Length: 332
Image (cartoon, rainbow, N blue to C red):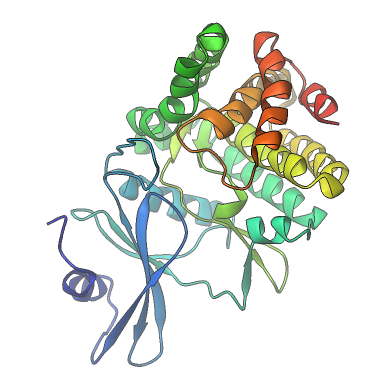
């Protein structure tokens, strides 16, 4: 079953989704991502869709296996998040759970820009970070301590395989002197159950509408009912790494990181905010180190920039901050 072609699998998926597909079906591979095969589907009548199929082994240098069932929970996250914040996720048309395939709305490049590409091109629109923070915050607020949502996403094993192990446990293994604090952060993250988490809030997974600037979150394979601090730290990490990569935009990106953090935290009840910020601030330098020396290092940093990240992250891991502002200050 794992080797069945798209051409063999798609007709049934389209029929089950209630989509008439008479005539030719054009299938075009799409680039991006390391965990799935993604194609664009164009039907004879002109309608277009995106189909995404989870891979059992991720396309990275290290041996990184991941359960195919993650595709089902991605579909569940897209549906629930889209119901909470209309437009924040692509529409789901169908699912082939047996083969780990999702049939999704196709979002064309002429209508949506990739946030990562915009940032790396020097176009750091401050409205994007604020809009992402607001959308995430609304999802957390709607699912906060919701036992029904928690039961829908029993994905502790998935978040460990896709995030906690390759980012934190693997990095702790490479740095024995930092293993205790990194593994402590891992344990705290794994044990905290608060709200519905995306798990991969990276600019490479966020499209921005060219019409009104609203964000669309993709690739929710790490969906998990757990600690929102993971999403916050994950997104902040990418803004800070790009600040290292692009010194001419460093002040702008650090400012956006600060506004992202403030807007994101504001969606939580006041009594939860100090502990949430402390967990986020402690996790952030661990993720910074993981993105230069973990299983999935960012591709755009040279060795000098990687060393700069190590020099910032390692002291913060040894003495964990409680405020996000302290991490931002060290980056200046």
